[in-house]
Amino acid sequence: MYEHLQQTDNEVYELVKKETERQQHGLVMIPSENAASVSVLETMGTALSNKYAEGYPGKRYYTGNEYIDQIENLAIYRAKKLFNAEHANVQPNAGSGANLAIYFALLKPGDTVMGLNLAHGGHLTHGNPVNFSGMTYRFQSYGVNKETERIDLDEVRAIALREKPKMIVTGATAYPRQFDFSAFRKISDEVGAYLLADVSHFVGLCLAGVHPAPFPHADVVMTTTHKTLRGPRSAIILSKTTDRLASTPADPATKVKNLAQKIDSAVFPGTQGGPMEHIIAAKAVCFAEAMKPEFKTYQENIVKNAHALAETLQAEGIRLVSGGTDNHLMLIDCTPLQITGKQGANALADLGIYTNFNTIPYDTRKPFDPSGIRLGTPTLTTRGMGAGEMQTIGHTIAKVLKNMTNETVREGVRKVVRELTARFPLYSELL
Ligand code: DSN
Image 1: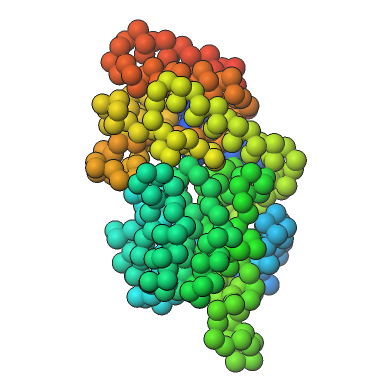
Image 2: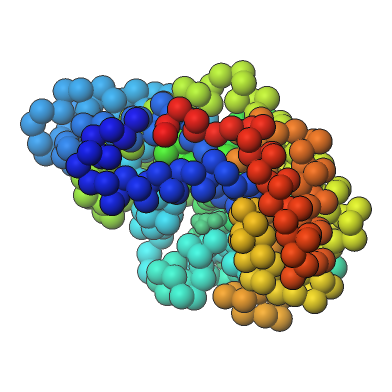
């Protein structure tokens, strides 16, 4: 692969090669990353990238979209089938832009919204003050209980009853437990709020039935497509057709829109221009992959591996936020180890074990040098690793964090990483 690039631009080729080798020879444990199939990667590199297709299938502002329309319709068909969704918009470029479009469709500036605090595992677009979401809407965050480090639904309900939000956002980027969408819907109903489920991190687990499914509870579901879904770097929005909170019923004659139409208009022309049809095609490819029985097994194995890893770390005396995990990720509290999350993550990365430093609930440190390390199992599970490997990796991580500068330990860890990555190859067909 990449022969043309190699011949015409060796400088870029060499960097692509080095990055691919880094992924091959390292243990990628950042829980929002994965390794997409070669078919997904190939599709992203096609001539579909050249085409402008502003609008939607059958209603484009450019000519020459006969095949592009078929591609986008196929992606929509597969997304609806996969998620059992009434409506799918496959055009969002990324998760943040997709959330922007959803808010733009259903809220007015200044409206009250609830979302999980970023410092407790939420996402920037769930109302962080430095993000457009926190600047445009009146976000009232909910957090996790200080003792259990889990979302307290009684507290969520109390905030909702007090603040009367127009929307409740569920989902997280650093929460090792499950979301009870049915309970969130009950609270939403009590206060007349939309329910948005941002399932980006654990979407694959929902599809496999190892995490509660967001439909039929949520009005709108947003997911990125490159995390546990293992597709291209992008996002989609799924929704109900009917807007159950609209004061006026949808009416095409008066141009009053239903929920699906509101979402579509908010994506284009509301917040995006021409869609990336090469990425939409790659999304179609990943949806078909996710319909296969192997995908369900893969997701089950992600969770089994996360349990094995968490148990090993805990047996090593390492404190995990909330005492473990129910999903694909966990958070190490580095405080008892007398190191910061950044020091720990950097020490691991130096040895080819990639995690990220992360705040933990009620962290006393700042986000750029917090107390936690976030890690997970999606990419290692893609490579075929199982519980035995998770135990080896758990002991290895503990060794690094407990012996940050011991060169003998570090050399031993390099050997473990070399042995594991050689035994579970990735992308050998690429270079
Ligand atoms: N930055 C992503 C993550 O790592 O979880 C979320 O957008």
